[in-house]
Picture 1 (cartoon, rainbow, N blue to C red):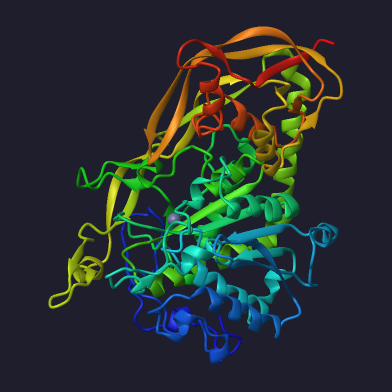
Picture 2: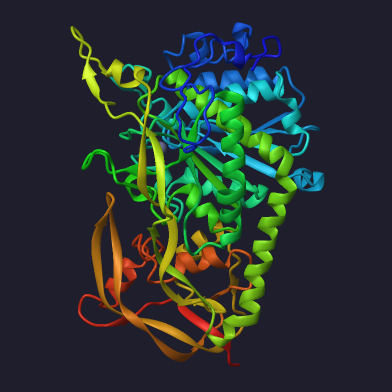
Length: 569
Ligand SMILES: [Zn+2]
């Protein structure tokens, strides 16, 4: 918001008042439903500090070079800013990472010395979903030049407003009224979806995100912004955290139980925006819908999404999605409201969040030290969602596209939103992540020297890998592969190995890679290397060529990564 024009939420004359007799979901007073926003909500700024949507009555999204110009303008006006190039894309575009701190911070070492938590926000991993990009640009301006400078009192804020820099300018037509006529593409220049690359690490963007942000700055919280299509819920923005059962439950439990309710209340009270979890209903099969599940919003319990994968590092992470049926301005408004209140929360509770994360680090190491050698330590290799009970949801029953007469442009049927939402009661809430299959959590893994590429990926995941200086004899388990199957899962051809573990004692020569799991990122290493994890390295096909070369098509073979419980000698 502008320093000159404070927003008076309570005096806006046309707030839609929705009062339901039921207490749930949420006690509502003044809530902006549909595409309504408070007039002038983003302030009254000179044109040089306006974003492209602000300059175009929210008709256009910001091209890449104007993102750079906007950040350059901030550099000339604020002493609380540092910028570096996070990566250079396939089309040679730079991806600026903006560091905001008071006093200014220019390195991870400075940030650590300040004792403040680092919070990382990114948008535009899918440039066809650009409202988070616009909201973060506005928020950066308001923190550096406006009335939100206090957000730098207790935290260091890192922002990548546009992660998929090539996709941003690969313009395509929307033929829709709810978003700008020209939008970037979901994928990068080579057609990769960056938000499925969190484990397999095949894109430079994600590899450099890990190297330059996650590994060096160790954010206590990672935030990633999206749009959600196809749903009929009335919430302008929805949220979720990492739900990988393999991850330490401490950080995700804190986000779910403590942070989400607090931010939800603040966003409702200060911005008039009602929010809820990012799940989906079965409205296309039944009305009223009967189930509410992450599986219908593509948010599986897998680690392949950036936010999910980050949960495997004992850190906190949040994904938000603004709703497809709203105008671009409402998207940006709700994204701005959510990110603002999240940063208010982290500014106040950052130390508490750091403690939860560091406790998870310590607990992970302690368990491996105490129990792994016995073979009694286990962790999940597969999970699913189960019911938490029933929920009531605000929904728009009639939200659908239609053509505007005389044009070839689609719009949401106007009456669908004007009537306001209805409450659908008693929907089964299938959003509780649980493990369903476990495996022995070993003391460590041994990987033959030829698998340099695998080890490189482990190191990008920030996992410590040593090279044996002399041979070792170990006891543990090896996985015998009876069959390698390729299966289609959500648009990807994944590998599944059929087989089982056998107890074994083996000797490994000097030069073998050793992953000692007495390290904070043990759960991430387990997730990547366990042969039964559906979207670990095996699932993404990283061992296919090797297994085929040793004859898995004809006979049983041994998976090359050995799980050791004890070093015998
Ligand atoms: Zn997305």
